[in-house]
Amino acid sequence: MIKQKKLPDIRHEICLKHFEGRKLTQREGKYELPTGQSAKKVQDLPLIIRKPQWVKFGDQYFHLKNEGLFRFWNWGKVQYSSEYPEDRPKVLDNRKDKEYSCLILYRGDVLKLMASIATVHIHGRVHQELSYAEQRTRMKHGCLSLTCGNLAVFMVSLFNELGIKGRFVAGMGLNGPYNTYDNGHSLNEIYFVRQRKWILVDADMGQVFVRNGRPLSLHEVSELIRAGKDFELQSIMVPAVGTWDTSESVSGNFPSFSECIAFGNPEYLKAWYRRVLRVPLIQGNEGRSFYYFYCENTRDRERILRYSGEYKAMDKPEWIRRFYS
Image (tube, rainbow, N blue to C red; front, side, top):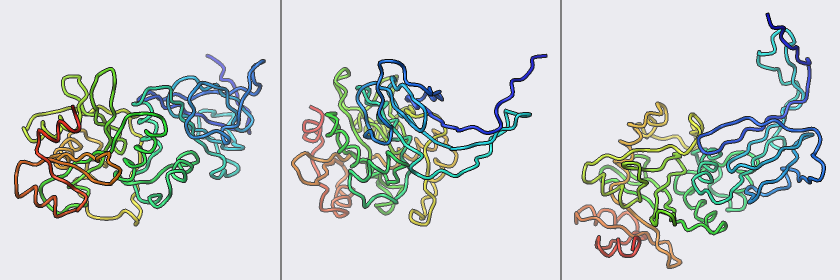
């Protein structure tokens, strides 16, 4: 029989979890910095760093070398059971926001960057009135609570800052009232140079859209939906992460949307996407908030135009030439 090693009853506990796309690992720190290395405190670094480096959090040092999200927790003093070390430890002193922090290492993998943002994001409305800089600070020291449209706007600002070619896109449904969870959704498109195409990415739901292993654009997804053809969803996040804010600030009637959140079933989510992405919209780049769409049915087109003066209708060939040539 192997004798089980006893752990000290009380120790200082620091936890670091690394989210690299769909991979999650827990990292161990060092109490001494290797000779010849320098480290900055995690709290003094920006949300996004661009190169591997040593960092200090609490009384430990960590080497960040792989892209993705790093989430640091300082639990302070915790008490373990010497007799049953596998039991959950008891936290002896409570730690506030200053003892929690995030870093994102970005070196060019845009999908891992999007997965990092999606992991820290909470779908809600708590931080919608904050500036872009303030929202970044909230993400660094906690979680960022935004609805899909505000998150897509946040992502465009982040793309501009990092030199990524990306844009704000959205979809509209054709049944029921607009500005609801079941008749519209905002996302982003990113231009991938290697594939020479725009790829649709949903940071709110942590999904990309594929067919036969090939990533799709908003135009391709909406065309498949109207033709009654299938597509697949590919999660970019660690399974079972991401949060839905159920506070009073976001309460409302959105039964089918809450179904896909509650059950986590890809078929529920695909059915929802089929409703909300029937008519594609893309934000123009002329410096004003105009969103351009095409819709062959005259009645549906007029209904969308009545919904907002910022929406502009285009003929399908002209729309494709402008945004996908």
